[in-house]
Length: 347
Image 1 (cartoon, rainbow, N blue to C red):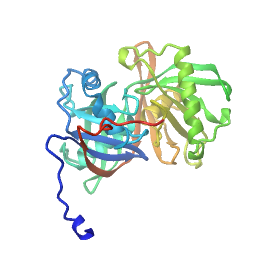
Image 2: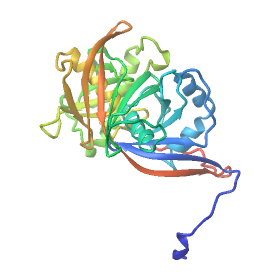
Image 3: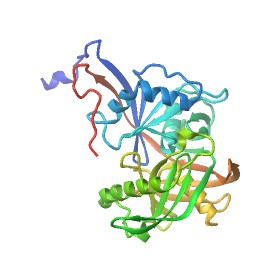
Image 4: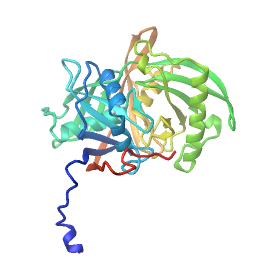
């Protein structure tokens, strides 16, 4: 029997649905890229495409993100046709609760994915991609060595501070100071050292519990408004900041988002929001770059490349850098008679 396993050629019945995916990670944070098995997603903008997918195909998100094929911290992306005339492709993002407004770790992984697989052919050692994402067009650059993308940077959307030096009462923590900033998504940013919270994986469950409490409390206290897009006007997560474990790095970043997901990476949109906050405080100058580590000790770097206005807000233009790796390729089967075909989640 064991010798025959390598020759196994069984195929599921033709009426079963199939979804093919490529799995990657950026700094430890997973990205499951849906490649086929879902219908064409109509819409003139990425937000329209995301809404159509949410309203008509949300069972695909649940089936691919949730157990038994995924887990509570799985993260995904759907690739679409570009919506802008000069863009290479479009994308929107999936997680355990629904859909993200922006995802830096996904942009980094997607850039490596389309360039290394030659889905999009670009010449040179620093090919550039223009990607339509929910908050706007993202410009990403892959840095190649011997034809392989070793690292990626991207110019994020304008990032700004919405609220600064605010306070809430949290059971178990007391009076907590926080700021709210936007880096493609809105985050409540809290200094973990002031709260006595170690930012390591042994404190994982406590960080989820308190991160969600802070998110709910801030959301109930203050209005979160994007200057142009109502669909982006919500608090996405809580970012705990703290001292880095290595002196060569600026700080540590742990993001609790969606329904209690913990970002394993330093969070691309999160470090963009932090860049806006640090610049507003006078801690980060134009052209200055900082390296921020994750709960795993993996890193992303962020630089303020310039300033702009974004609606009524003074904003920074962040450039974020990181690395991604391939982890596998799968075809998921959906047996129509499987009572759990659409997935389930424990959190």
